[in-house]
Image (cartoon, rainbow, N blue to C red; front, top):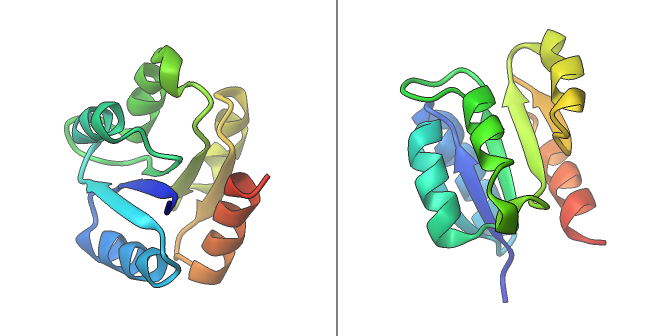
Length: 120
């Protein structure tokens, strides 16, 4: 069965690019355009990994992360932060984020990071 990845980003170009790359590698992909929708999808879909942007409308990635970590049955889900703000790296470590990737997006590096966290 294909591993399921939830992409949460408000940039439709990022979503399309990441979705295309992941589907070409036979991952099942679910998307959300902000943290609020992302929480709903996480509850329903129970993804194996989440790719999360920080700056989004309605609910930003940091707020999503704080709320998501309180969901007991999803606590161990790896999260890869996707951001243009490298200076947030220390914050990611404090919040137990599995990994991060700085925009502009390098899909080869993203795939390496995904494989690192899904293949154990």
